[in-house]
Image 1 (cartoon, rainbow, N blue to C red):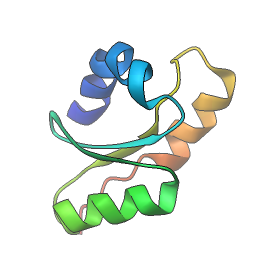
Image 2: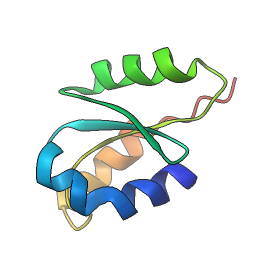
Image 3: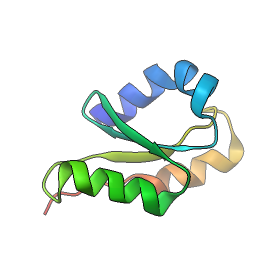
Image 4: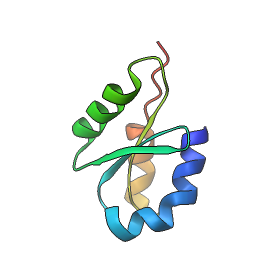
Amino acid sequence: MIEQAFYEKSLPDLLKEHRGEYVVIAERSILGYAENYSDALRVGYRSCGVKKPFLVDVVEPLESTSRKDSILFTRLECTN
């Protein structure tokens, strides 16, 4: 997934200013940040609608144990 690769590449910079926030990514662009998952989904749907895929993920180090579950839960690819 393009968005996941972009997230991982951008993570060092994201951690400096947005640790613990949710980031919304479409292709190779950051669409916005949110304090919670619901608000992040709103940003994604507002920007992408239901036809363009986007990723919602919490900004945490990749090696974080709690992060593994949140990636699976927060990733959303809207393909309708």
